[in-house]
Amino acid sequence: MPGAIHAEGLVKTFGDVRALDGVDLDVPQGTVLGLLGPNGAGKTTTVRCLTTLLRPDSGRALVAGIDVLKDPDAVRRSVGLSGQFAAVDEYLTGRENLQMVGRLYQMRGKAAKQRAAELLEQFHLTDAADRPTKTYSGGMRRRLDLAAALVVRPPVMFMDEPTTGLDPRNRQQLWEVIKQLVSDGTTLLLTTQYLEEADHLAHDIAVVDHGRVIARGTSDQLKARTGGERVEVVVHEREHIATAAEVLGRFGKADTTVEEHTRKLTVPVVGGAKLLAEIIRELDSRGIEMDDIGLRRPTLDDVFLSLTGHAAEEKPEENGAAEDPKARKRTKETAK
Ligand SMILES: Nc1ncnc2c1ncn2[C@@H]1O[C@H](COP(=O)(O)OP(=O)(O)OP(=O)(O)O)[C@@H](O)[C@H]1O
Ligand SMILES: [Mg+2]
Image 1 (cartoon, rainbow, N blue to C red):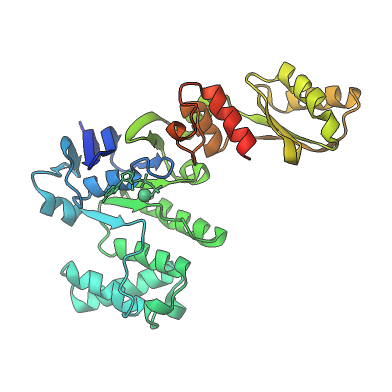
Image 2 (image 1 turned 180 degrees about the vertical axis):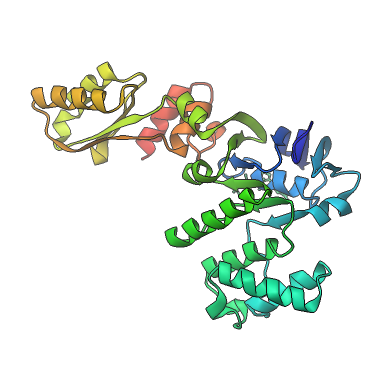
């Protein structure tokens, strides 16, 4: 049985840009799918197709069991969308914006008022509730926009980069709101650039690049595919970089990355703290002074490098080394 959000072979082109090149997704009811990908990967286009704002050229999609192409109006009634760019009316106050959404969804005046007040409280906007939103900061608009998407408690939600532009405290608070929604049974597709966010919230992650899902799994599965943990060392002396690289090379399970100007070396490892202790002893016995050393989990950038051979922020065809992932990796190192 298809999930609450289900897509098969979605294709969308804009002129000669193939924004979606056959996207397949399935999000079981009551779970969160994190859609991860670099700029231009097709995340927003996917969300717009699934929420009926765009018509795909081909493919099929069901949201809350309803066919997106056959019955877009019914889909619209069942979904909440918070877009990448906050869509609030500048001249209305925060409270008026939320009440207006309630009225648009045929809530009674009193119910709309009450729901607006609840959401303003939940999103810490009560103090600013009666100011026109054109006086809000970027983070406040973002929060109001998310609140607007929650007015009618839709069973299926789409959030396009919900926490981009929020400070750490507001990001945390929003994560709590999202967790609450999901524990109440909402199905959520969220896009993000932050692996940490997907880590906190998503049951499953789909990595998109060039309009295709190139990997999917839980956060732990994806990280395991990138070679697991990294040891990161900052050596004190530039002259020690080569020796340190040689030592790390012996312990690592893939190539060591060197960042000359920060004297930082990184290598994927298996073996955790015990291996780290061995590396420290070995570096020490070779007389290498360290400013810093530690284990860290892979970042989104590591996932990207490992899955696609290029970093999240660059496009492989633009650097003239498209056929050789190692060459791209080196390009990235020197570009740093
Ligand atoms: N309306 C449009 N007209 C022309 N090209 C478009 C349009 N919308 C998207 N594209 C192109 O489609 C591709 C995918 O864009 P999309 O907005 O889906 O990416 P994204 O993954 O959301 O990126 P970001 O992380 O920057 O938000 C890009 O190459 C983009 O330039
Ligand atoms: Mg986008």
